[in-house]
Length: 222
Image (spheres, rainbow, N blue to C red):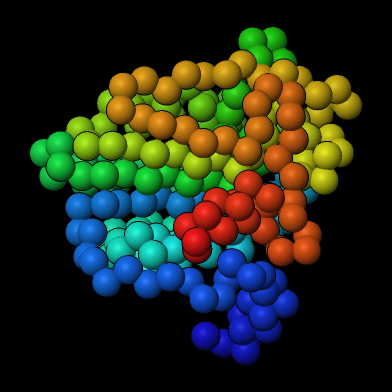
């Protein structure tokens, strides 16, 4: 770790970043995709998203017992990066013939289609002005639900109303929170989300995490 990264991590210290429980078991059939989008090309940054992703990976490997190679952390993911990560998890699931367990985690901006209220993940090369630059949540759920896997659990630390973590509207939004349509996961998939409809996914500044992610990690720490 270089000095700059060490200083950055130290400045973002939280009580869930310490005393991470260690699980001696080796969950070789459990895989995770972690997408942490903080620094956007055309939108404001998502405070603490990168830190959220880094710590989520540590909990996956140390507490949930996943081998390092089973966890794919993608920081500041473009649309193509998101597609590639989902392609990887499908290949893995197919290779394990239904015996794999899958975890999907996303921290970053979400946007709504103002005409249809459909929700989208926003890649770092996307803009809230054009929902076509996003990844439809309905498509994400469809792809994850169709995986040949024992179980699929998704954690979404994002809101889809056009708001930032601060509660203010994104620069590309029209100043009115849109109530995004709730897409329903199917089959063996379970989704835990930081917000619903026009709610905002807030940061927990005192702990340097998104509030949803902080309490998720806190639960894993117990």
